[in-house]
Length: 150
Image 1 (cartoon, rainbow, N blue to C red):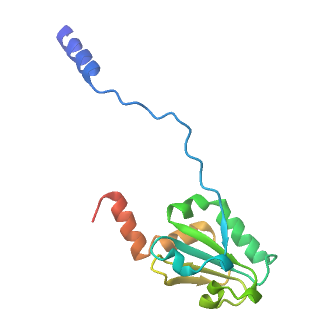
Image 2 (cartoon, rainbow, N blue to C red; image 1 turned 135 degrees about the horizontal axis):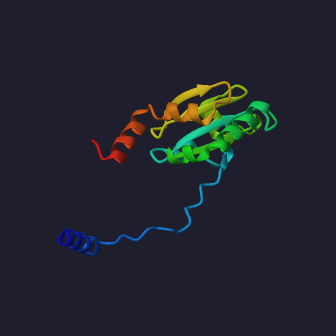
Image 3 (cartoon, rainbow, N blue to C red; image 1 turned 30 degrees about the vertical axis):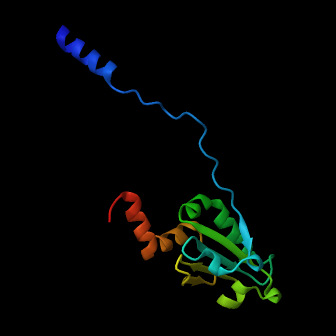
């Protein structure tokens, strides 16, 4: 029994000790929107998935609800490489508005390939948006790559 105890102690002491990371966790990303007048959709090609929210006024209740829904669980959108673009001024005729031609409130999801994947005339919560994104081919490949599968 003493030999077994000695063996156990020697194996325990000989094993490498790994340091635990007790530092503060990284700050979650802040929810930010980009004004459609300041960007073009081509800027995000192959790097980000634009989520574009249109309204005829920033006071549109659907627009305000959509921003609240996005902000409530933005970390999930951040994981999926999204960027939120807003356009509430139809008279400004931004490049994004001219490309997508919305009527009133619209939620438009665009893939990294620059293609419009989904248009919705009503607000969607983050859970619905992420389920939609997770079905897209490029996202499926990202998930497989993260799991180490081909």
